[in-house]
Length: 455
Ligand code: ADP
Figure 1 (tube, rainbow, N blue to C red):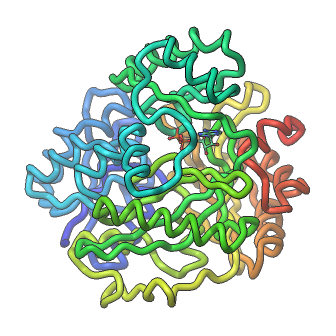
Figure 2 (cartoon, rainbow, N blue to C red):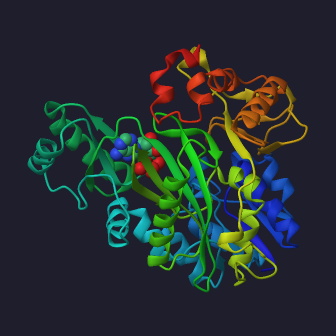
């Protein structure tokens, strides 16, 4: 790999450029017109406008234009980051057809995990427990009602093609089911081009625990322990930490084993995450994210393994436990201390916490031992546009244990000054001071139940 095209923007584009540079790989950035002055294009060795004439997000989804730029620039590999085209099987097929290496799993993996029903069937085949529910597209309202009869309410109506917290709907009573089912199916058809709907029992207060997987192209699959991503708002993650300290060691082991079983059963390649919900003595598979995740940082901090560099080396055919990767064998790998990540986003409390935009007038970031920052186009004078997602910067702190990491997070948030756009820093400070969060066992419903966190 000599030259890597980065098919993304923002903080993850910068993260990927950094990893490539450290490996001596040249980088090619792409940018939409609206990102003309964005930092990621200047950090790369070369940069080209993509999707001219298209809307901002559509520009980054322009497969033909990305392949054109890659060929023109002589890139021999493409990393998709997360979001955008990262889970698009057609994109991977197009990249491979152009003779370019896709940094990620194989087309077949994106297909099987891109459809959550197929993913569930795959988990069941690998003897991995799934949330009680249907393991096939529900045919009609009558079948949905029969499921409700048997399993009770509330239940979750989910779209097979959904993602990022979209395409899910909680149904509290049988009377609501008909409408919810029909709306979900038509929305799924509109948003994802596929009407398939399935049902799951709605778990009351689960924790979200996910296993980081790395797999090379020679059949070696390992895990890098787990993350707790329970702190969510409307099913979207806000705070993540590693390891999942409030889950028993025995339970963590069982979840790690299940994740390995699943990923080995499909001969998985490169980085991926297997997500579970944990409730009492049970754990249940929910989905696989076949890509690098926003919260990969916390795993890097506790294991010392650079996940993005690993992805680039795996894609070049290197083996997990040999040079240049040199990742310790599974039973030798340890997680040291605890790392926590806060997703600092723009949001305006006066406008229903919608993303805020404008010029960053003042920016002073925290520092010192145990503090890590991953930012995109964020500095005094930068303009936050309304076109893309509202993530400004990821703040990660590491401590010898959970409390030390939380204390450090509070100190770092106190140091952080961002003026000109409104951010969720006041909200984050409330979370880190809350006894439920400080117990390390906040369930996925924590934020939505505690409206005082937004005051
Ligand atoms: P997405 O792909 O949109 O992220 P997921 O299936 O990963 O959707 O679920 C996202 C979040 O939604 C989970 O972390 C959890 O908080 C909640 N969730 C999903 N399924 C269930 C369920 N059956 N019961 C309770 N909560 C659920």
